[in-house]
Length: 235
Ligand code: C5P
Image (tube, rainbow, N blue to C red):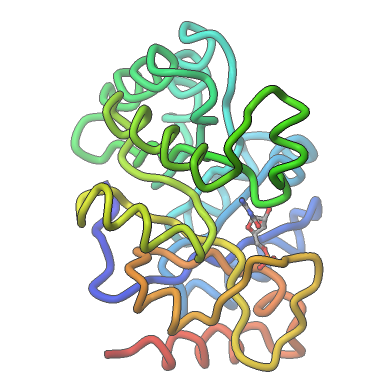
């Protein structure tokens, strides 16, 4: 599994459907970040071979958020192993048997297996939206419930907002790998993110990896932006 950074490491989110753009970002950013995140937009447009080309440059976080019956998720994880991702996401809401199936399938890759990360409550989901799906009690309570369930079922870590990191560290200690989007360096445009924090605040709260997209990729010089964030995180 990918080693845990001393202080939080940077995952650059390559949110594009363009393989040329993703490969240019990968080349420019790989000296400055620990991992590159590819999501559904990229994967659906370009397929597994295009993921493998990025993985040849830096460790890849394959963020496809699997959520299906356990047997199907196990098959999807097994198929993903051929791309040698460092991290994979599944939806915590799939339940314990699905999480266990994902972990068992990942273990088939041996010691170099990907970390299985569970997405608890999407940051775009507020209390009112959760209530319409039959979940009362609000996002924090649901994140806690799903975190316990998935970590007990074999997930290596969680994807969560900066705001939830202290609560999860208090409940589960140092062991879970915490991967945190919604990061904005001071003075940068929040865009559509609302529950944001700076890289330094998020690292101090106990995050292991910071997922950073537009503050890097929309900067005039993405490599310089990534290098500046990396400098701000040095102990
Ligand atoms: O550009 P920005 O820094 O907002 O990108 C954040 C990345 O993290 C995007 O790829 C987004 O899809 C992802 N993400 C998120 N919130 C989550 C899960 C993933 O912003 N809860």
